Figure 1 (tube, rainbow, N blue to C red):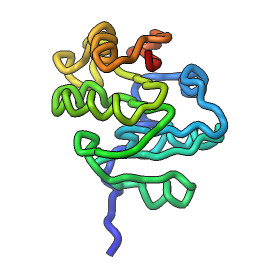
Figure 2: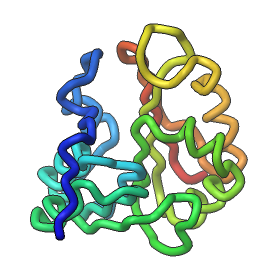
Figure 3: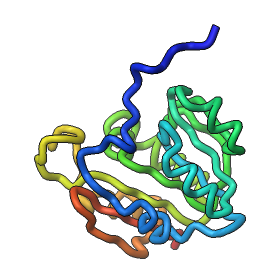
Length: 175
């Protein structure tokens, strides 16, 4: 019997902020043939955009609410907590609004996974450490410099970053 997931809030499309999502994808340098992992990608919002740019896309999420639809679109799906991932190899590992949660739940394992599975780049889109009435509590948000330090610890250097309303966007490259 198919599960009714109509109660699940689809964050994208109903968010109380505006992001130029095409600019995010441009910033990440998604190209035809690139192999991308979307960590905690939920409804596949960014995965679909990556796919439309010609990338081979895999989405990993602890919940499979939208996996049937994404699989039909040619996006590989993995239902698993990222902290338990033990295989894979990707040109880009992308995280939108999830790194702060991964740091709290399994920082060492997250960094180990990122180091092992990312061949070239790690992209991070997350909330700035401010209280603006939505997103995670301010106490759970990370400063940009903490993410830079974490990535440096595993051999990735900040290539570029951009501040966008309520967020920061970072791209790290393997040193």
